[in-house]
Image 1 (cartoon, one colour):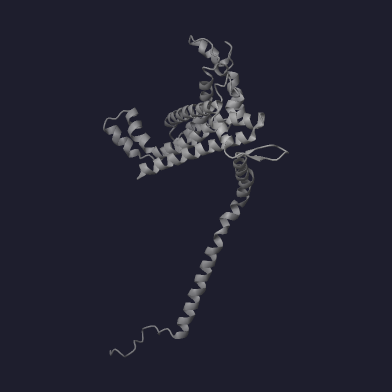
Image 2: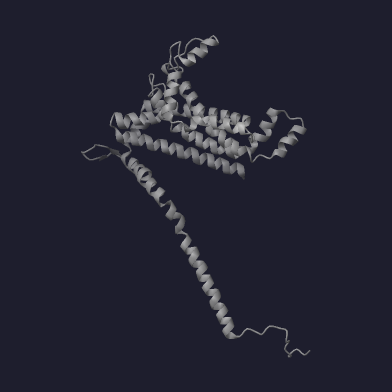
Length: 323
């Protein structure tokens, strides 16, 4: 067959009208796709709008107001007076603030380390799919869902300093004398720390349980074949596999420890003799009891900056380790 002879089985060539119709169809379809894409961007924001409005009104606007107040001498009904950084200088030069900051760091470090260690131990003990374990996990998680005011009141009763107090009765069974607990300056900080660990460990346990599901089980078997003990398997397999979980929990627990207020306020209110005074209780007393709202706002801003710096530093260290 010659080159210029048409093949009867071949489809007819598309004419100019057919090609133009195809281009118009493709153009219309592209416009519809672009329209759908451009119309989707506001859909998530529409669902988030109620929550964002609540956050704006009850969180971000008060934060901006507190930042403004930290540079002012707040005089209700008389008008605020701009004082610049005088409030910050008052806070930083105050011996009470430095002591409260030290107490906050000690309490945050102790609660963070204790809750993470106890949470990991509980997670290792309760790992599995048994129904009984599910019930035990739910029971162990109860301190997290119980209101902190109820928790503080229960521990205040257990810390009763007399010999017939609950914890003192248990100490008497093993031959130890009664302790003052939250009424003794030497043991009040440790008592509040124990309460925070008891309440925070179940939350850390649940996060660790979720992280344990991502650890490769083959590594356990290989370590067991190599003769590794249970402690060695936890040290060289479990802990490295939970590195990202540790970093997340460290940030959450550290922030929770730096912002501790309710349990300290309800158990000791900073006493006895200021031995448990933390930054949040000091800010509360400065702002609402002594009516020095500007100085209290400056302390709150400094606490926010410290928390932000801690979070950024941990994130930078985490990114450096992941590279």
